[in-house]
Image 1 (cartoon, rainbow, N blue to C red):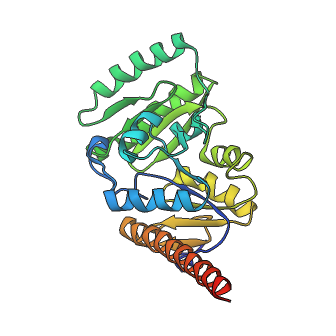
Image 2: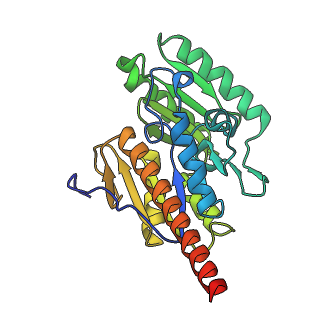
Length: 268
C-alpha cells in the first residue's frame, strides 16, 4: 500500500494483540544487546494483556529467551525465531528444530565466512542463524550471496532478509504462521487480531491479519501490505499506553456505575 496510510484508531473491543520487538516496541541499536523496552511501555503491555484475557503475544526474530529478558518482569506468550519456537498462554513450548549435525556444520561454515568480513556478526539461535551487517553495511552483497549459497545447498533452510540482517531459518516458518497458530487457540480464539511490525519479516503477519479482517500496522516508512501506519517506535509506545489507559478508565467507570446502581437499589 502507499505511504499515505493513516494511524490506527484507538481500539475498544475484543482484540488479540501481536507486537514485533526490534523497530516496533524498541528502537533498533547497533548491537542487539543494547536494545531495551521502557518500563512504562512494558507495564502498559501487561495492562493491555490483562484487559484482553491474556491475548497479547510478542512475535520476533529473537529467541524466546531474549524476549523474556526484554519483557521482564512480565511473561507473555511468545513466538521467537519467526515462529520456529512458540510459547502459548499455558506455558507450553512448541519448537521446530533442525538436525544437530546440520546446525553444527552450518555454524562452523558461517563463522569462518563472517570472520573474513570485519564488523559482521553471526548470531546462532539454536535452529536458525542471523547474519548481521549493521556495523559493516559495505558487506551487504557478500552477506546476501553467502546466505543464498547456504539455502541453495541446504533444502531444509529458507532465507529471510531484514534490516541490516539476513536470517537462515527452517523452511516454512514465518510470523504469519505463528500468528495463525495463536489465533487458533484461547485466549486469542474468536478475537480480532492486531499486529504491529516494521520489517520485511512482518509482512507475512500483515497478510494473515488482513485475511482475518484485523488491524495490520506498519511502523515506519516503506511499501507494505499493512492497512495502517505509525511513524516510529515512540508512536507505538504512545498508542499502546493510550489504549491501555482508555480501557482501564472504561473499566473504572463501569465499576462506579455498578456501585452507584447497587447503592441506589439498596436505598430504595
